[in-house]
Image (cartoon, rainbow, N blue to C red):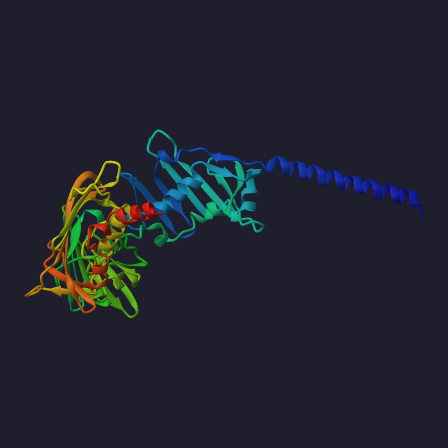
Length: 452
């Protein structure tokens, strides 16, 4: 056996293998180049057709709103459509795989594409573009893709394909009761045996039924916001007498109506088993919803009542008049945001700290109890009149009045003359009200400084 020949042959084999590997790697490097397969402005698209294996979706842009035309007529999900346009206009690829030729398409699942996306331009003179997606790459879940009118076969990221693999529910707009919640001026609802009505007056919400009261704006706003953005968990199909009975909407658990200058919007909520369903004006399908929407209405009148005697922020007060028996004073905030006495003309300087503490105590004063339709009230020994600046309209002042009687046990009767009911508040508010001029001036501090 000639070992020299064997060694020479082995060396030749190694060289050949190295050459083959080098050539293959060079070809792969040449192909593995990022690029743009389709450069088509998203703003030019007015129609989209999407063909999945067994489904066909058609979308069109009308009045700047995407609509679903097939398989049914409905408003399309804005985010879902914008995701398609963001990922395919333009269409960038990660790697150029091959130049298609004859039977090459079968190797990539493109002879019978799994997904086809067609984009139509507003300009009828511009051609439509069809993007074909074939099989997935098992290594990284990327997809093979090509233009119907092109030869390049490329690899695109898996997240691009996922925007096309949605079902009908994902492509539909889930909001079915949209309205401008800031434009609502009144709201009524019936939940079981409990009926409520609310009205907005001069920028404040009032509960008119079952009892008159200033309402907590945050709780009313929470209902308005939730109703205006109510989303479906699923769609049950077209409304009819049978479906209305099936989903508990003939005798709803809740009916609510929102009114504005533009009209009214009604929503009814029913129940089937442990699931809740809604029917809204202007929408001809019953929608399943989350139960937490219904929970926002499941409260008594006390839940919605505003507990503060007067609504204001301490830093918005520009004038304050105080009177308790013979003790009285009046202060006003200057342009430099410092307080100055109007009455009495003592020459003393108001204490910024003491005035802020007083205003904070008044702003935080809340009811422990409400006295509705009072037949008799005690004498209100303390009267406080303030003027607050409207933050939204600087220079516009609103008048606020608060009155307090003497303490009776652990509470004090309080009144806001703008409201037709009274309050019982904690007796500690009396301790926070000034009893003499020194309680609101810097005199004591100055005297201590002089003594030192």
